[in-house]
Image (cartoon, rainbow over all chains, first blue to last red; front, top):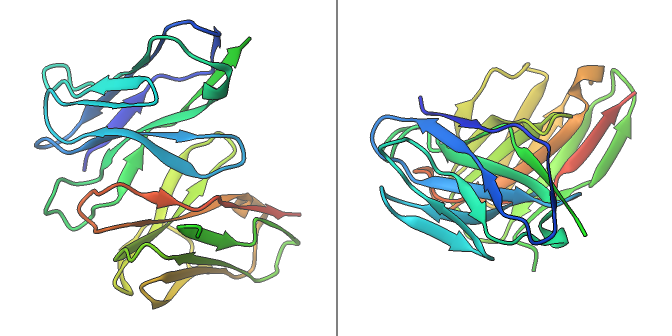
Length: 116
Length: 113
């Protein structure tokens, strides 16, 4: 099956700092890639996704580009806010489209704390 | 109009007890899941149902038994609770089982004392 590796945190930044959270994957073929965010006390929410190589997913100022050459899907934001404090998860399907196990597998999560 | 709702939000119980967590989705999705999140935030799939049919059953003790009365509901029953079962359990649903995005409930924090 596929797998995902995500940089470990925690990450602490000051407001308006630049954010990068690294994510690399191993997969057969080119599965869709996802970033999810979990705010304190809540379930995970889809933040952004990319469905094919070179696609850029974006939402709420966050971006991630699907790079097949480096098998990466790093999350970036140019200027973080206190409200971005959360745990971020990189994810991809366990098996590619057409496989019998379409559940998502998640990285270990990166906790981001943004200080005023 | 919550999309995926699970109850209860908190569950505190003693070792050896039996408990259930309920989950309902109103998104019309075909596939539902149970994930377990440990204290380090690591998420692991436990079960998945597609149109009431069990399609994923990971290495989970058979004290855990999912039940799907219809495709909008997926409940989790746990027998003979153990200390190590303490975690946050998330229900989720997706349109299909081909890697489409998941919609999560807000979790049930289970504490076994």
